[in-house]
Length: 213
Image (cartoon, rainbow, N blue to C red; front, side):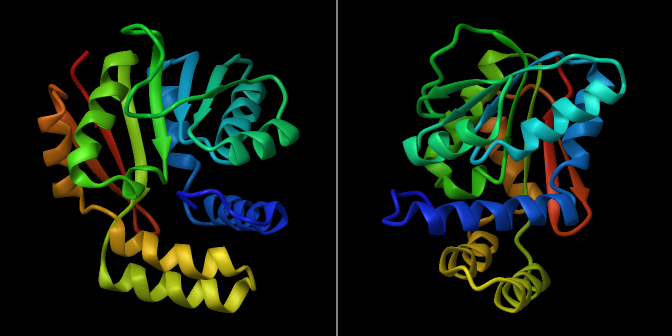
């Protein structure tokens, strides 16, 4: 999924698999919890994919009488085309996460979900530095945790519950490429986060925030 794919139909099916996994296996609740706790209203989602998480956050906030303004950014034109067709009421930007086209402190929160594991450590430092730079409150990383059990369960789920070739390949590989909480904390510190904190989440996920504002 890091490179363009030949079949948009296959890519859309893969993104539906990811959306289903986010709903079932804790991809939305940690982000919603932090957004609500901080009172953030202006959010940047880096590596938005199909933008299913921004849509869920907006719907959740609306039920609580709050309004969120979310900007969705992705380096893939294919992803953005799919996201734009599915989502209204959000802004879409084509750019690289390692060089965000925004001024310092442009958003309350800059977040990413299931994106960090796609980035090699040497580049992840710059990526995390950019998330911190444009965030007034805190950046948020929500990602997979690398464990043997996570790999086994992800491989089983992907091979039993979908026929999509991209999902079957990418899901277990994503676990192998994921960082541990300690590794993610180390990268955040190198990126200049002042008080990074990692939290272990259900279903082999983790969140990373910067408690210093």
